[in-house]
Amino acid sequence: MKLSAHYNRVNIITSMIILVITGVIYYFFIHLILTNKLDRDLAVEENEIRQYTNTFHELPLPATYLDQQVSYCPAKVDSASIRDFSYTTYYNPKEKEEEPGRMLLTTVNLKGKTILVTIIKSRVESEDLVRVILMITLAVTIVLMGTLFMINRFFLKRLWQPFYNILKRMKNFEVTRMELVGPEPSRIDEFEELNQSANAMAERVRQDYKELKSFTDNASHEMMTPLAVINSKLDSLLQTDDFTAEQGTLLEDIYHATGRLSRLHQSLLLLAKIENNLISDVQQVDLKELISQKIRQFQEFFERDGLTVEIRMEEKTTVMSRYLADIILNNLFSNAVRHNIKGGSIAVELSASRLVIANTGKALDNKTRLFDRFSKSSESEGMGLGLAITRQVCNLYAYQLDYREEAGWHYFSIIF
Image (spheres, rainbow, N blue to C red):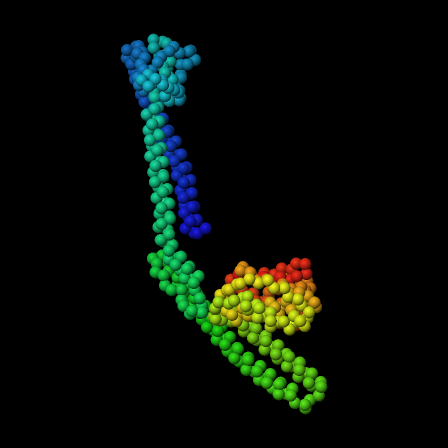
């Protein structure tokens, strides 16, 4: 969920809760105020009856009006001090229906007798007034919520636009282009600081990339030269006959170790180039044709170990470096041959969505570190970099490299 949507939701929910709570409190306060007003009107009517009784020594005539009703009846002996407000119903003679009312039950003394006086006032106008106030409050609340929603949706979207622009530029940032994130003018201090930090980070990444590229180039040049000299001298030395068989064995071991060191250097250099996206010969690659070529190249190894190859391939074209595609296939086929068994099998399946290269072989001890650098079994003669390079190339092109073992078969799948 985006920050603006989350803020909008929290703001709307919080506003609704506060408005509902305050609306309920407001309703009860208005209701209490109007009830107190009715009670004061009833008290005024009570006072007028008392004054009339004290002046004329008789009760006013019982009366029934549209909004008020007064009645009398003899009081009991124990009712001398009654004065009670309560809710009741009031019969409206005009509308001929019961309406809500407010009643005052009190007593007056007349010629030594206690008279029970009942005064009832209609609450219709008060209820109508409360209802009108409630509707106005509800309408104001709806308008306020709608306004808040529109402001949060459109104004906040414009407010956060510089942030999304910076984020988009950071996603599109490529260190090989030697570009900055770019300026994004904004009146918000935090966005200005974010833009400055993003450009500073991009500048540091560019500088680190330049240093790494320089180191890679220098390391490649400086290491290949002495290795080439050593190989050349060893070739010349092995062609002479001036050393014993023991010395020849030692020189042969040195020759093989130097060749292994040269391959290791080339593999590490290739990993560095892949990680920094320095191989940019992207083109349309016909995987079916390339796999067919690779199978022909490995045919001698298949026949040497008595391996049978099952092939099921569909047409598949992908956009990537042909050089890296060749490296992936070379590593997977080499792995399938090296870790197979005598008289085993290799299965190749190519479809529009994936490439699967499977081989028979022994169960693996450590499957979790299969794609780590220099991870290899004790029986392997390789350097443990082939699958690491394969995974790095797949990551470069957003392919998914999976491994599973099932019924004596090892399946390596590249999901496009």
